[in-house]
Length: 266
Ligand SMILES: NC(=O)c1ccc[n+]([C@@H]2O[C@H](COP(=O)([O-])OP(=O)(O)OC[C@H]3O[C@@H](n4cnc5c(N)ncnc54)[C@H](O)[C@@H]3O)[C@@H](O)[C@H]2O)c1
Image (cartoon, helix red, strand yellow):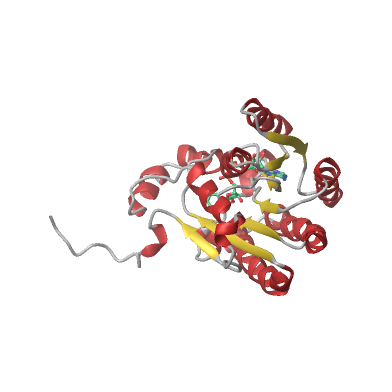
């Protein structure tokens, strides 16, 4: 799996899954724009790639700001002249919204709802809409979105996140259909519980959540960011040349179950 001569842009690339994708893309010969609202994180990942002999630039972008999304794409095209791979991946709830983050539907916080849909879904559309004509002119490209198993099924207390991730999965399918004739593929990954700062916040602050999460996973462990990176890189690569409109679950078996407990007694 090689990306020689290809240019990628990854959001949320300063940490977790996006970091793994940016590093993996560069390790395989690609040039990558490492974009994140945490500019220091993006700079550190770009420096890591360059220290290993790879090619990268860091871009600070706040995905709540459409003008910054436009600038991020313009900066990538200005630096490298093309864009072959787009990984729309960033998400995180800022500290100011943490209080209203977990709530049942009747208590949904408007600010959390609006932020979640903007950063997680609308920004995905805004970047994709901007890049599609570029990929059309180039003769093709690959877009990978980070959805979630939470976009396929429900969770308690995070309705905005569930609705947003379901939107990402279905937006992915529409892009795949509409641009298949332009040699542009669009897929999404649906991670389960992955060991990143985003999940660690819940695992370490909500009593009992860590043990219950591990107990729900048939493989008995969290996924590693690199394990999600590998799926994204496959979907972005020519090895996935006939894969488009797919939502690939990578969750250690978490959603393979009905939820009915075992009948075995050892
Ligand atoms: N970790 C999991 O268990 C899990 C499971 C399913 C899906 N996901 C999804 O994976 C994606 C990556 O998350 P992660 O787990 O690697 O978390 P992470 O916290 O390690 O990385 C997320 C990155 O997104 C950036 N970000 C947040 N808000 C931003 C904004 N407004 N503009 C630009 N960048 C912003 C953060 O600064 C951070 O670097 C997210 O879409 C998340 O919903 C994660």
